Each structure stands twice: as structure tokens, then as C-alpha cells.
Length: 308
Ligand SMILES: [Zn+2]
Ligand SMILES: [Zn+2]
Image (cartoon, rainbow, N blue to C red):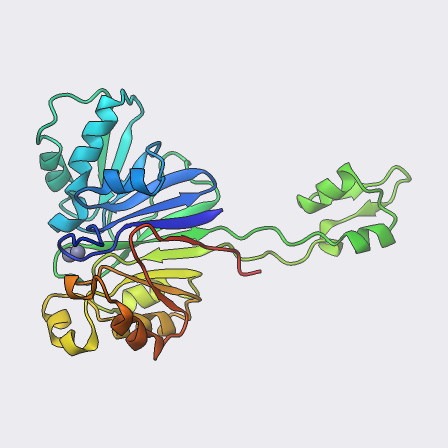
């Protein structure tokens, strides 16, 4: 299973309806966060996100995206956590997070390791990620910033039981071996290779999270064929000049990126407070270019299924 839960969908400051940015990604029982705005830990409780996580990925260090880490780390300490916590972010991560974690926290019973990442980095911890890669990619936000792409490895092709039966291969362990790509020999001495019974490899899923950014080529590249693109859409078209000045995107611009990347689905986040209650305007503008668009709200959980 691969799913995301939106913990905060407002830009810059919280509103009654929406908290500042935070996103939980859950993949096969593993949870991590992307950004951690003020109040994220309470949003995690509200929306049932596990505190058993070892990694937080920061897109950049504007206050709305990281101040929540102070309270969350303190809570981890109160819970008696001993496992190390890994924090990732672009240039400046060591300074910003290092300073933040001295505020109001006397002693932590667990280690916190801060890692600076740059566009193109594949983020791994001693082979902890076997079934996918997590890659940082470049974004344009004026300050050092990155987005994150979770790209699963290809999966084995589908096993065809009809073909196996036709070849009189007895159902059971031999089928399992063929499925795993092994050549087999039946009891009566016949040899079979998996290529005859297993279809071509199937693509894994691609989840792409931009963080704050202008629409840009590096995001289009990172999001090629994405099953789900989560793109910021701070403003509507009537404020497109403001979007440019503040290095954000409009909903329409986010949709154009999704279209150029041939993404399958787009979810808009990071809404300016004026769209907090009524985001329909953003949705309509984006859908005019990219129909498979939704606007996130706090607590929204989105599954990312396999394409086949
Ligand atoms: Zn922001
Ligand atoms: Zn920002």
C-alpha cells in the first residue's frame, strides 16, 4: 500500500480549516513526513498517523514548513523514544534544524541526525530502502529548496497459470519458483525458463511532492509519468503576478506542470488563506488544463494504486 495523508494544506499561516504544511507518506507500513509545520503532531493524532517514524524530509526552511519539528521531537523524547531520528533538508538544514532543536528541549533520549541533501541525491540509509528510491529534485523558490520523489522499482511480471497448466507443470512450489524468476526442472526431467510463463516487468509507482516552488522544468522532469503529483498552488490566476513575485505557483501553473509531465493525477496543496474555505476557484482553473485534479484539505488521505 502507498498512501499520503495531508496534515496541513494552508500556505504561510494556519486558518480555522487548514493547518500549515505537513504530509505523511505511508508505504507498506513505513511512515515518514514531508515538512512539519507548527501543530503537525496534533494533526497526526487527529488523522491517525503513526508516531513510529524515523525520517522527516524538509522541502525548505520557511517557518511554515518546519517549526512543528520542535514540539514533535520533544514529544518523542517524552515518550521515551530511543531510535534515532533522521532529518533531511536542503542546504542550511544543519544550521536551521540544529538551532530549532535547542529551543525548549533540554535533553533527548535518542539521537537526531541532520542530513543536507541536494537535487539529484538518492537518499538512502544503509540499504534501508530496498523497494524504491527516494530522490531529491530541484525546485525554484528563491531560498534553497528541494522536492522529493518516491520511485518504486519495477515489479516482476504476472505469472500465467494457464500456460503453466498447459505445459503440465504441477501447481505448487514450481509455480512459485517460476514467479520469482527461477528456471525449474520437473520431476519427469523437463526444464522450463520463467520467460515462457511470466509477463514483462511492470512499473512501480511514482509519487512526487514539490514543496513550495514556481512551475519549473526540474519538477516536470521529476514528475514524468507520476502516479500522483502533489504540487503547491498558493494562488489563483487573478494573483498570478503575486505568485511570480513570491516564488509560488498558481493552480493553473501546477496543472500545466502535471500536463507536461504526463502525470496521472494532481493534488493541489499550500493554499493561500483567501482560498481556505472555498478552493473551488483553484480547482476550476486547474481542471481546465488537467482534469484529473483535486484540491487537498486537512485530513484527506489519498491512495496511490498501481496503474495495472
Ligand atoms: Zn510555504
Ligand atoms: Zn516557502
